Length: 145
Image (cartoon, rainbow, N blue to C red; front, side):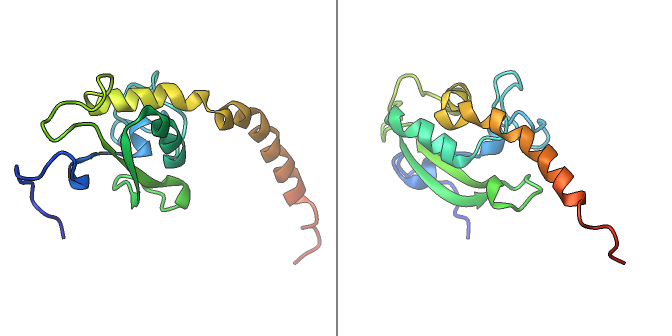
């Protein structure tokens, strides 16, 4: 059951932290599908684990939730997850001066995710695999009727 917004809740309350879904910074999504930044800045298919790994060293308080973005068509585990990030103190001042708004956090994520070690090795490994799998699947199906 959703609770209505009230001014007596503090910024440190987890319900007041900002929510960031991976679709917000996904370059494969359109604006209608939920992308919030320009495609030139965005990352190809980010995951909530990558977003968590980037934000942990920044010193912000984060929480991971097992939620699915409402505009997401696929229900696969790859697309699940969202982050809650605390960017303000109780008095409304920013915790870190470089992360004043939600957009600042998303831009930091989009800049930092491609620098992860897991991202730097991934593209070269994934390209040859689909061609090998397609060739092996067609073998052995002749004569079955």
